[in-house]
Amino acid sequence: MPRRRKPAHRTTAVRFAHSRLGSRARIFDDDDVIELLRAAIEREGNQGAFARRHEIERSYVNQILNRKKPVSTAILKALGLRRVYASVERDPEQDHG
Image 1 (cartoon, rainbow, N blue to C red):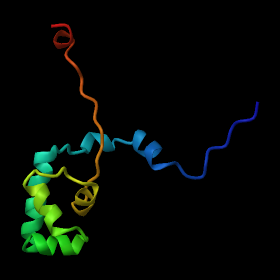
Image 2: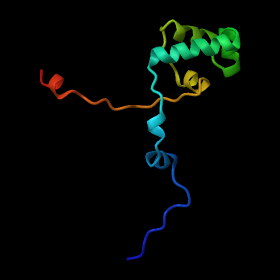
Image 3: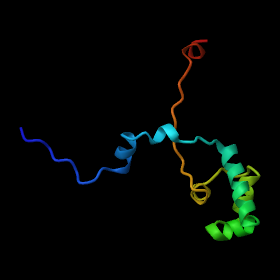
Image 4: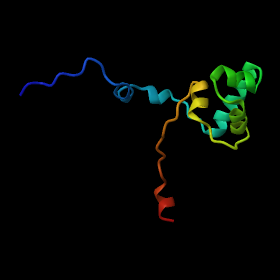
């Protein structure tokens, strides 16, 4: 039986699956992202400057900072982040108790 040819390039997901990238990943929760957002705003000077630079409504940035709106993909992108999902190992004793 003839061998199948591999595609000329691998998809990004396949490359990451075979790399050690995840071993160096940093995991942030929403509180961490909001602190990163505050630091980015401080570097820009104020909320308006940050919002203009990243083409996000200033009022929306303010709502995120005040936890009235969830962190959006646009904010994550502006901070150089992306949303991922992580599995959490469960404690079998907690599942049955």
